[in-house]
Figure 1 (spheres, helix red, strand yellow):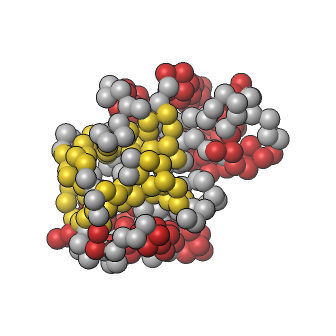
Figure 2: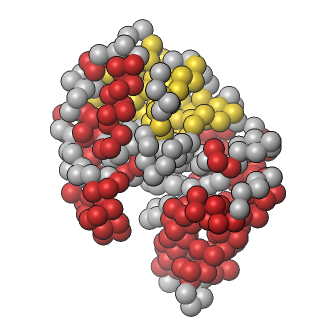
Length: 318
């Protein structure tokens, strides 16, 4: 089996998409009784690995019944259109707020292009391929779907994005959480276990909604969560409490920086200080420069996410 494909048990396989670096971005392949479903796809550049996973597991492309992005951010859904071209029997199952962006990705691509520029878009994402509308079905809160030998349950989970759903797998008692249950990078694992932090990406980060979504997922008493960033984590009370505590700290940081000149830079510095202190308490001994490099994407996106949330709050109060 290739090093980017991992059998997690219960018919769940983790595919390291290779986005940004190793063990940063995952897609999942559910398999049972000759039927399969993908949860998240990574970007276009991940599609050869997704199709390669089928080959390594001895499955034809026609075995895939569903492709299920947790939300339409490009590191989760950017490869959907290209992947679907190779899966003749598959339907795309997407949150209703995200469906139009995958049927016609023009707006989605233009927004990302404005942020990243043409060179970075080509390097990391590639051209977005539309999905034919007749192959798209939308989820709704509480919907069930027979897929890969199990009855998946969909939950509407805003907070990270309003077009986000999470998927419950009763076979493993695990949630496929996209970005709702945070991120945990293997470079920061210590003897204390994995380090888990919230993902506060713009433009729809809403901390109160995110906390409620996390609490809703916990109400199912899951054994594990399948994070896109990155891998399967056992759900433990202390780990979850830490992640929600960091969320509260980010909210306090945002309020402290509101109205400051150079707010974005202040937020970015504050996020780095907050996360570095958290890692130190977790027992991480990596040099400060390595920590800053590994968290570079998170620092920028969290500062932007806090900024857009603060701006919305200010607008609603006006």
